[in-house]
Image (cartoon, rainbow, N blue to C red; front, side, top):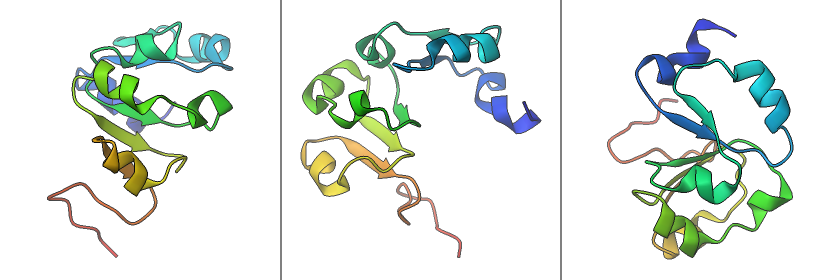
Length: 113
């Protein structure tokens, strides 16, 4: 793992990970990383989290319950690294949604190009 791979953890971030397929492998690779815990279900990973970061395309993630998600998250903030959803649809449900790689930036962040 490169030095940049754990920068959030080194800065004190608490990360709860959930993957319906690769949890055993994630535990094997990252299990001793300080600040990282593994959730047994997607709702456990979302409960009181500051944000959701989607990094896999498993079918379970393609049919998320956005109302439940909004209720579980501390703030309704989603970063979608797989572009699984229509940004207008998700934002229309009251969630702050960033589809990574679609040329959008959070407010106050300039895109370089």
